[in-house]
Image (cartoon, rainbow, N blue to C red; front, side):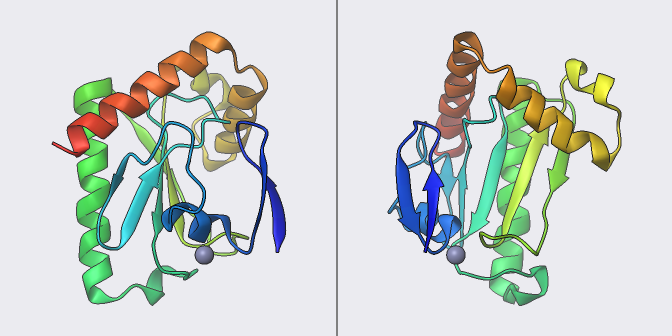
Length: 160
Ligand SMILES: [Zn+2]
């Protein structure tokens, strides 16, 4: 078991945060953006980046090569649909995708929208972490409102 601090300051004891989120044991702030048979999408509001989406598998797996054929189809269709929604309802021009297999959680993809302010950190993979930390450190109430609004808009269009 690990103790995890949620964005609202509450702590939970879980074996795997991704399992806790996808099973509904932990409700992400802002709610579930969308779900399929095999995947679950939400935002971690601790990183106040409007339109950021985390897609996690419902099965506790680590590697891309563990996905069944059905899951592979579901995955690409789902993230394509989310990407389209980010562009259409939030005007997001570019997204950085980040996924590592040696995670303490399980299989999940970060879809990080790229905004102009982020380019001061560069365009490489190394820029992703400073961008996330900068967003978290400089989080304010206005960002929080914009983030929750982004979640609501994505949720709406993805569940039509
Ligand atoms: Zn898990």
